[in-house]
Amino acid sequence: MPETARLILVLGMHRSGTSAWARALRVLGVDLGARLLPPLSCNPKGFFEDEDIYACNRQLLRQLGQNWSHWPPPPAVEQRRLAGGEAGAAALALLRDKCAGGAPHGLKDPRLSLLMPFWRPVLAAAALRPHCLICLRHPESVAASLARRDNLDAEQSHALWVAHTLGAITGSAGLPRMLVDYESLLRDPQAALERLSRFLRLPVDAAERAVFCNDFLDADLCHHTPTALPADPDAPTDQAPWGALALRICTALRPDPARPAPLDDMESSACTRAVGGWLAAMRQLPPPPLRAPGPEAQP
Image 1: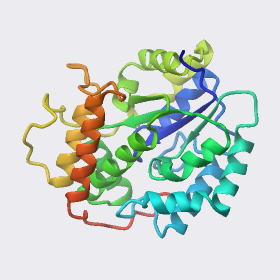
Image 2: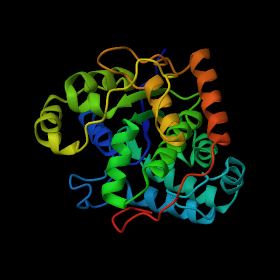
Image 3: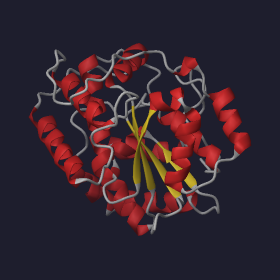
């Protein structure tokens, strides 16, 4: 029988609508915490990220010699080693504190997508089985947003999109999870909220829904209109290697008004095989060109 959500993790690449989806959780009565990161000019409506979880994830990446834009992504074996030591004990205490209230709790930080090998044993120690939202947005839109905010090279953004998306998928294996699409949320928020409600088994608050749809969401949240996804995930493309892989993954996973996503069942053997192929392709590609993020990026 499907479980009612008590903890929800919002996963996915930076600039992929994770903030909007986290805000959407409030429509279902989910508590995002009392200590949220303040808005910035690059995200004026807010990040909806817990300051303490954000600080914990930044510290974990520093201990691994990385930040969110580093390449390659942090090794799983090193993350599990940290989870078995003082860092894991501190994260466990933090997680228990955050989830101590009666309401369902939501945690959003794109860094979670890279750090699930650390967090999975911590979640198990806390006897928590979270529901996971895996946020998708067209990689061209993400790259355009990161170029504007951070002056990142498109291939770097595409590689990070691949790493965060596959990290979210592999890191959430065995947990209740659902793919959610940013453009679909903007296009039909009512339908997106109903689908979210069914997945989490939490009721929609009508007053909160009106605030979210009428006041929070607006056209200014989406600055870039991407090209349409190809009908065939394996169709030839003139994209550079990382852009081509990101487009291939997005085409296979992301729902489109004109067609269902080929791999909308994430637990299917077809999806498992596809993810294995994408991981193999990721390991074979050369490192992307790297630029340091701009001043408004959150390292």
